[in-house]
Length: 318
Image 1: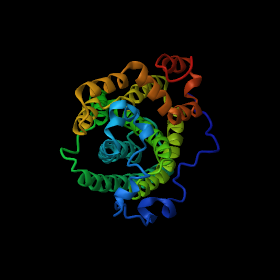
Image 2: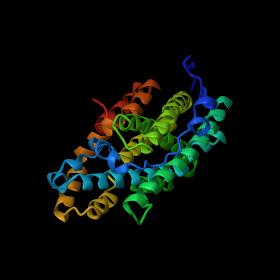
Image 3: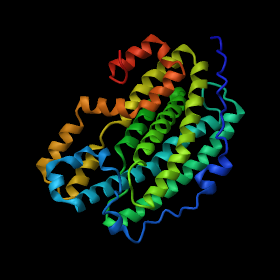
Image 4: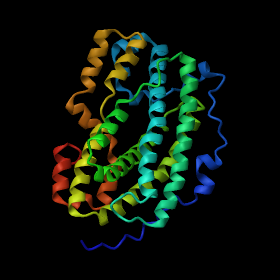
């Protein structure tokens, strides 16, 4: 196929990484404050608005301490997941860029920026683990880390992917992850959170905003150079990946609610509403806006079959 000219906006760089990356410049130690009890009068461990089940009458009636425990439990699980995600998924996606495993020959500048990003992700895993350990200790949360369903599902996707398509699949996992998490962190950081947690998430956000732009640009470059069969494979794989990212981790959530003393009938009712097809589609459509915008920018939806595929899944309008 003939190659299209690259847009002038392509830079393939993390820019001022040496002076802005949290691993290079952050002065935060990410320790929880001594006045946690006082802070929890007005702050949260995690934004309640992101956990709609907290509005269930039985949970509201249980009082503030139960809500704090449930948000702390969610945050610990999210941070444990983040540690695994950065190491096993995102940095594996970075490796296929750095070591020339993709079906397209990438530019040297992309590989240099990818090495910087790899360093960032290792640091994100470290501070996510450090903060999770502190909160788990504070609430005596045991039996962790629990393997997140999302990681298991991504591992399963790789396992059943033909060997020759695995590098592209790894890259697409990284692309979706980085474009989604940047948006998630931006929304989370708008809430008033416990200091230490707030410092960590804001440092993470600062880095991930650059990572999202980087993966968006590399995807655009890759998409311009992929052949027709590779594009067809990528489109179907992207749809499957987006589905994975917006499933509810039902086994973990069930246990978290039980551990907080929530009755079986309430747990069943909460999960029943969260795992419906409509609820999952609604989360996916709302949460994948940045990813869908990146696809649109790359010209992904100029191909009618991709527009039909994603409209049928409820991610875009038909």
